Length: 172
Ligand code: FEO
Image 1 (spheres, helix red, strand yellow):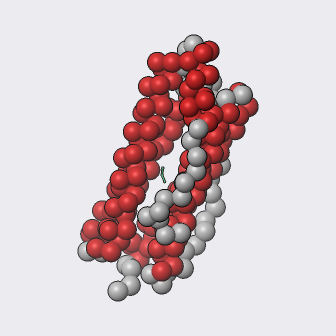
Image 2: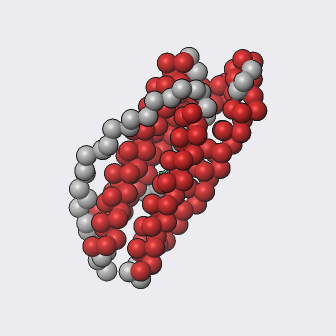
């Protein structure tokens, strides 16, 4: 059964939003790298890779369902940060926005009685919940420990330990 134009349209748009997320998180990594906080930079570089995977998974889903996606222009991230906390707060705000986009995709699929796409989007709905939790935890940690150089050093070490693992449940 072919996907409806309503569904292909929102999913095509979501590819662009995920690519933008990847691009945005690279600017977060750049900020922290420039500050000498290599662990925070590492965390966001990995986040950028994950966002790219999300874009690729949606692209693959569309191709596998006989729809050729269109790659639109990616917006320029334009945030400047005044503190080490600021990117973390911008990260939570951005993830809440992406959650609303994923939920919208899900609602469109539901309206179209597109059970296959709803099932495909289940993974993204869960992932957004996890990403919001991570973003909130990072803000809490920074507020609790980031004001002290030793605390900040330890946090940076912790984020340095994050490694990139491609999700086994994503078909890229
Ligand atoms: Fe793929 Fe964090 O949105």
